[in-house]
Image (cartoon, rainbow, N blue to C red; front, side, top):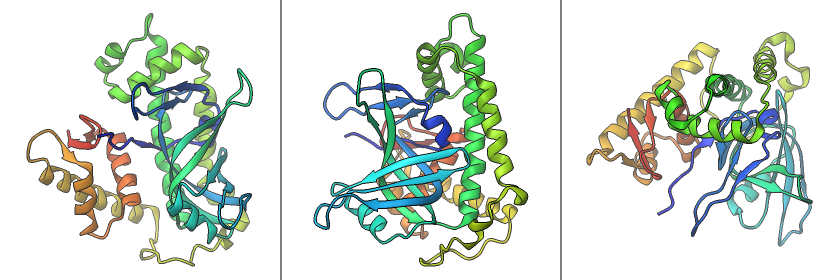
Amino acid sequence: MIGREIAWRIFAAEYNQSRLELKGEGERMPSYIVSPLGAMLNRVFLVGVLTDLDNIGTGDEPLWRGRLQDPTGNFYISSGQYQPEATATLSKMEPPAFVAIVGKVRTYSPEEGTMYVSVRPERVRVVEAKERDYWVLETCKATLRRIDVMAAAKKMAEPSLEGLIMSGAPRVLAEGAVKALSFYRDIDLQRYRGMVVDALKFLLPEYQPEPEADIAAAEVDRPEEIEDEEEAEAVQQAREDKVLTIITKLDKSGKGAAWDEIIEEVKRIGMDRTELEEVTNSLLDKGLVYEPVLGRMKRI
């Protein structure tokens, strides 16, 4: 069985610079795009402002294309008849709107040596500005972790997976850093540190564009209003604690909890799959869980 892939948090500026594609070998083996900071991307988790959306297909065979803007740039998305759930959701949306997307990475190479990246949504939902801000904050943290691992790799005479793991890097970041450094070679980490600083500035009130306050996300059911960032973090912490408890409970064999069983269990506490993806990504980023094999999640 081919299991679930991590949905990475990544800014548009890093994603759009990705040029290393690793094709999966064998039946249904996953393919990846490796970012300049070593994120091995098969799926991504994005939150931003949906600024453009058009159906360039037909009523019977829709093909929705749009742009999702984060503090560093734009993600380009496309969704057609083979993504019925995401396509149906997009067809009801009116930009601008704060939107969360979990989707597959896509590449397009019109000619040799040229590659463009986009995202094919699997799940789409309207969110609030505070959820976008929380995603920006968590994506800053995830980017800084990749920068740290890449900095450690650049200091090595011969960067290796084993060496980075021994230095404390998670395996998935270590593997990506080694591959990225070999391909991109001259990676300007200062540039990416500057990108993170700019993204953090974006969260300050004086940097917020005026129109954002008017973006309506009230067209869908929402959780209770969260008053401030501290409360949002407390809510997130409670969700992570619940998922950790569920993973521990379901891991009866010691080989990790099955992803499908986790999905079913979190439904009992009112958490949908997209929210579970967000929580587990945060737990993976924090090193509190890992995937011993695809399709299973184990507590560290």
